[in-house]
View 1 (cartoon, rainbow over the protein chains, first blue to last red):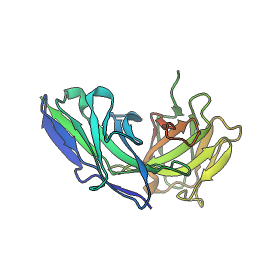
View 2: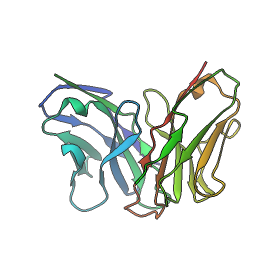
View 3: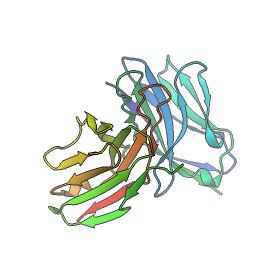
View 4: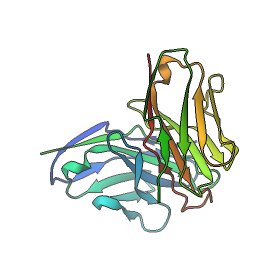
Length: 114
Length: 116
C-alpha cells in the first residue's frame, strides 16, 4: 500500500520569500507523484506531476518539485511567493499500473504574509 | 472546455436525513471519481467508475452511501441516512480513463455538506 506524509500542516511565509513544502511517501512499488493546490471554496488544481525522467519538475505559477528516490521525497518549492499563493497544497501518489488510484496527504496550508 | 460541474455547492441537513449530490464530468472523460474530504484531511477516494462500471468502491460505506453512473456520463452520490461524521466536502473528479501516465484527474468545486 502507498502512503503520503506532509509533516507541515501550516507554513507562514512573507511575500517574495522562498518556500518549500515537504512531502514524503511510502510505497513498495514505483509511483507517480503529484502536487495539487486548493484555493478557498474551490476544487483541486494540478500544479505539477512526476512521471519519469528528470527529477526536477516544473509546474504552473512558478512552482517546481524535486523527486528524490533515495529519500522518498517530493518537496515543492517556489523561489518567491505572492499573496495569491495562499492556499492548501496536497501531495498525492498513485501506482504506475492498475487503476491510477490517488492517495493524498493531509495537506499543507500556505499563508503568505504581506 | 467546460470543467467538472457539481451541485449543489452547499447542503445542510439533519442527521438521519437523506441527501444526494450530482456531478457532470468533462465531456469525453470515461473515468469518474467521488472523494470525501473531511476538514483538515486530504481527499479520500470513495468510488471510481470507468464508464458506467465500478472500478473501486473499497472505501465506500455501503450501508449508507450509494453511487450510480447509469449512462456513463453524469453521476449521483447518495447518503441515506446521514450521520454527523459525514460532514465534509464531497469532490468529484474525472479523467480520460486511458490508465496511462497522461491520465490526469480534474476536480470539480465540491459540495460542502453539514450534518446537524
